[in-house]
Length: 409
Image (cartoon, rainbow, N blue to C red; front, side, top):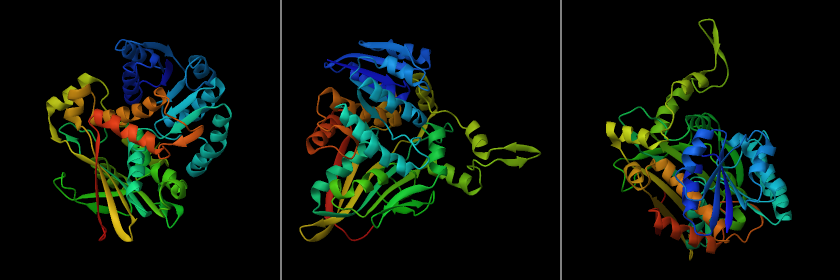
């Protein structure tokens, strides 16, 4: 029987806690956050839950809460990552997060290399497993990309494409943390091009796609995300030698943020306005609504009216099969807002990220991780990938694969 510590009881953490509460192999789900009220509200909904207040800025607070647990699920904001990683090592327990921390070093690439190197060695030395990037993207999309490799003898290019088409009558540009969204959108992105990790300008290098289930051609652009880093560093071993790997993102959030960026309103540099020094990014952020979190908030938005409830997550893998150039298109289908709310009382963003994240936790619970050390979500075994995708289907998340001759996209 397993004891699991869920650090952070927001959308991702609370969803994982609820899923693990239903697993017969789980004895206890310890829910921890600095917000005691949020902890108490979550624990009231669980059969095996226990709440504890944790100050994640203090490593000793995390270690105390982790005493005797089998796994720490880190669902906290990225800056807490180093503390949680070190606490997991000190507590000699397994570790999982939803996105790799960007605070190990000033350079994101070097930080991930440090995880693959030094932190992997340290977790292996205590016989434990750490897995990073286990939400929907990164996470589910990485598993889907790995599955696509089964249909290729060699891979040349991988596009990880995400389009967010959800729009409501209420002004709601982002359905997850506006701070995270605007930070990702205002920074240079990364791509793996000609076998090298390179910086790319935000909103640059657009691609256009027309998927049958969307009512229009959509534009997706460069966006700061983990996938090109993970997959690029793991290309030779896990992605059939792919030389070009991209993450492309589009939708209402991009349409909202791109003109702000062009106007300089996503800059972090102070500027003088009418004799006052202000940071444009902070001014914009101050005026954005928080993502809806509670059931009654979501219900109110639905009652006001949903204009569009669509989206797309597609992995396009281009390469060779039996001497012919082909493209493997993997389309992910998952509940939209209305279905996610009907199923679980949460948004589609919360559903896909939290539920898919919980499946990586389930691999721990089922003792399916054979790897020791630190891995990312694109480094699963074939057996782990099969189990993950089968469980995803049970949650209404499926993958449709089409292999066809490549004629250029």
